[in-house]
Length: 624
Image (cartoon, rainbow, N blue to C red; front, top):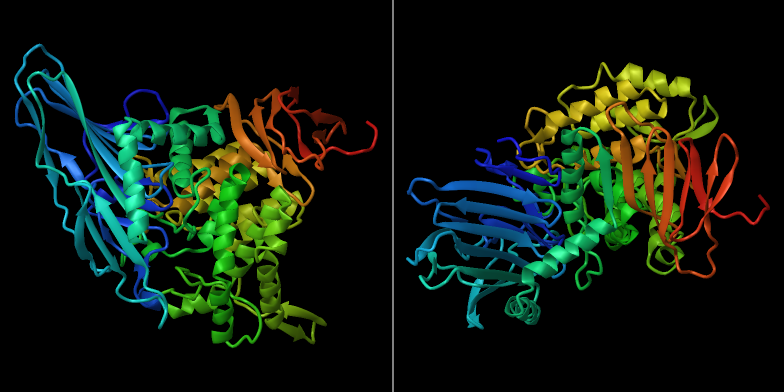
């Protein structure tokens, strides 16, 4: 099932993996499904009480597949295009080509869609029939669906989740309108080509779902439903990309990780729904009993967030707003554990911020999650200087509540004559994280000792993100070959042909494991480039392995500016493609460590200098 061709953005095969969990996902942060799966999930819609809460399964009308003709000469190809966010199934015969496209619309997030297109390949004029296989049933174990009257030729169901997360809590509504799917589509004898569009709209009210369906059907009538989707993805990629001129598997891995992670965040300019965070398996996964039931962990704040922040601060803000909205639940958690003040963020979070981990021990002992959340807020402020989030939108209330929580855990040591935070012994993985992303000050010798001591005692088939952090550490120390050796271990967690990550290298655990993808991207984005987010600057200190000729990072966001970096062994090129537009903000400048040289960064202008360490900061008023 190897990929065909050398395009690192398209993953193709002629036979699907036998494990359906490894099929690709199509998601737009509000709706998500795995292709050929009978359920979809909706952002923030959970069912079940406390430790039993999970993403509510909603029946998926787009679970449709073309049947392969029994005639000889028919071949089929399955492809995922990361550039267009589209899964395609193509049947090729001497008489015709049939193409089935599936996608979660990247601009109109309440829409899922698929199309069937038949193109005649000969001059014969017989009708061509393509059978469609669908097992859709408008029922759910989590939502009490009722059948409503048909709407503009489409079918309509609505209902509420069965069990609230907390007693007396809300039971969200789900409304769905979809185009009925026939058993077959037929290209008539006089037709050369024909397409059929099928639309599913989902919202939390009758008015909303019908409005979104009408908008989608208007796009269908204008012939622009699919093109508006691909244009939205093109805009996304223009503002965010990592191109590595190196081995094809590395390039494919980077594009795959970026695609799945970008699918999990709100699209550009999207509004009208509250974002409910990112779970380890993403929105497409998380039904009861799988992929951590769709709960949000520290994985979001530590492993995924830095990548998102560096490209799309507005999406990073949406993640922080989710934490702010669930602050009351976090304060409840602290009180439940006997702390009268402050907020303890849950080890596993869903809609309310209450602890929903099925196993109580983890909810009580995994206290580092609260620090992880606060670190994300700190990183966001350093990159954006967005004071409004803190002054007006609840950020400062969260910071204060977290501070109170840590103070409430302080105990006095008579022996050492100082306070300590009462807690558990740290795990081995925590030690490696001290250098990055925690950026705890330490000498190169200490950093090296940590890496060398913990590498041999770390589980070889453990979580995917582990080796990414070892790789970052060795890159800091300019031990490039040791870094590459660690990073190569991550490929054991990438499954073929659609680059779906498994949590563990033996295939066990969560799938579509965005946590591992986030760690891998950090190894590329913060390892090869040496990017570091500090209080006053964005630092860089690149390393280029022998098998990588160039790294181009497009769309780095810093203080309202957008920058492109092109790094080779010999040169660094920086271009500001968009300035902040704030007249109160000064220009940016690059400062080089060895020479102390300062280089002003004007919008549209390219600056080039020998590859070296340095940093980006607001331009100084001091003379050069």
